Image 1: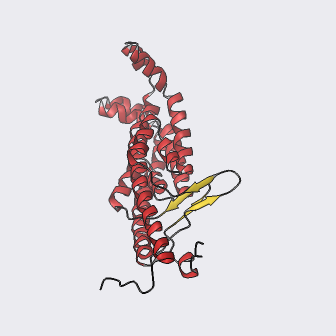
Image 2 (image 1 turned 180 degrees about the vertical axis):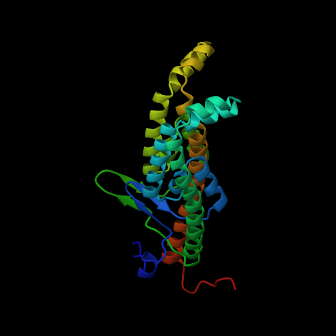
Image 3 (image 1 turned 90 degrees about the vertical axis):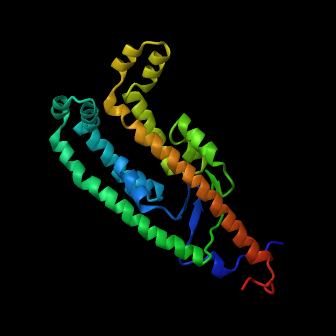
Length: 259
């Protein structure tokens, strides 16, 4: 018969994470400048990476709204190809100036939140915090188990969001998949792939909408990185939970601990 986990272990002031039917959310050590970089590449991705979904949704929505209406991606394309006058003509300054304060907040807020959560992660580890590894309700099941990081990365290369679906990070998966569908349709990505495969490179260039397609590099890069790191950390959390459970239930109190 399995022993009941003691109250001091089940209820911790600083939990390591939680498993809910729609998401497995947890904290682990991160590098602040890496999170700040993801905020710089696409506002909101940093908050998604840390499991702060409400803030992430707000910033990602604002990123899409301001970028599309200011035609920022198109101006970036023209600037990189030396057509600076065209870049000036397509930019909508009224929308672009909204970008500056939100962009600064996204980078600063992501780095600050990373530092704070790193402190809580260290305290949770030192306090030997654990989490319930299984959650179930009428619509979904969530549980910790070992997953393969390369599988998560490979699924993401097929379609951004599938890797997060594999690691049961459903809010991130839902948004990235939905946004990828919108970008694919608006940017005529599949049409460009078809024309390229048929050898019609000029037709593919004419069909492409760079304003939308330039969202894809940051989306793919973030999705591969984040789902890979999450899978590695999921595996580590699974091992910690198993170790904690075995110590609590099966290790003798007289077991000689290393001095």
